[in-house]
Image (cartoon, rainbow, N blue to C red; front, side):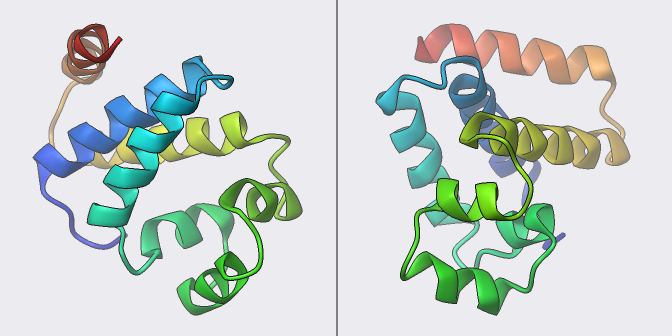
Length: 115
């Protein structure tokens, strides 16, 4: 995974948790898309979750939405993809020395502010 700052990973986790928890809300999806555009411009993070090359993913994004690409690569829904994204980001924070309690606390505190 490309190196992101811990603060960026925290923002991505909160946005992914918001979208995964409220799959029907458009506002959370827009927030996550905006954060991903900023921190995952080349698509490396999303491509790693899908198991494809970032160049292939960018080429597919010209014709299909991220949700359609995720479904083509084995995810049942966009919510499942966002849950996998959150899991990968949580694992990265855990590798950086964060405890599971600290990660959950971050998600719950920030998510309460965004809802």
